Amino acid sequence: MINRRGLLLASGAATIGPSLARAQNSPATGFDPVTEWGFGPPVSEPDSSGTRPTGTKPPKHGEIAKGFKLLYAAPRDQSPLAVARYFEVLPDKNEDGHFYRHEWPKDGRANPLIVGLFSSTFTIPSKGDQTAWCAAFVNFCLLASGKPTTGSAQSGSFRSNPAFPKTDTPKPGDIVVFRLPGPDGDLGFGHVGLFLSETSTHVEVLGGNQVGTTKTSGAVTVTKFPFKSADLELHSYRSVT
Image (tube, rainbow, N blue to C red; front, side):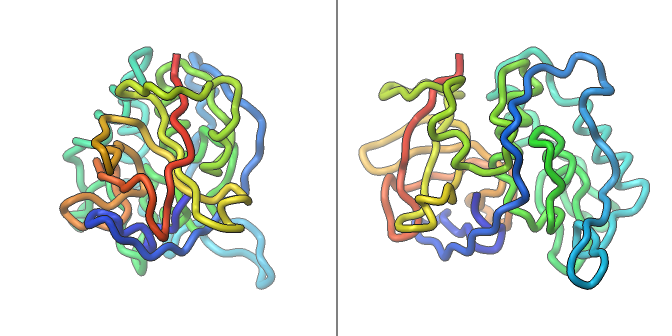
């Protein structure tokens, strides 16, 4: 996972500032009854000063309702890639003109759609839509398609999960796992998304918490990542069956 303000890889260069949501490792599978989605409005979690909101500011009730409506409308029983494509082109905006498929301004309200993605990881995002959410997005796409998930908000949870065996011949919709070079990478920090294609130097990824050609911070979008840079390096491709 990569901090939303640190992932600036559209041009092939990045400044990384990783932040990790509180993650659990319980696996999750299907969610046929709606009650199993586990959605709720953004809440507060304890900290040293008492409580703090999950986002910089709480979203409005209408924004929560709209965000969850969009989550519920995601394709079901289709491929994870089809689910991701749904989010990639969502045209919906809040009253301030901010897309629900993008993070909202850091000093504004938390985007409840992004907060809701964390229901697939059994975690509360400690910083709302400011919390790194690439793994939450991939897990949600898997969950909506009826596939197993890692049940974790950490991108490193995809590195060796038996539900996603390593492959050297990825196909569109398989999982791409990156790691941060050095000790932080050893701790599971990095990035994860869905494979689209590759060239001799780059891999094209559809994922959340990415920056695309529009330079919009933290969005569901397509980004081309170099196989290796000073900031990220390809760890593995994982098959989705």
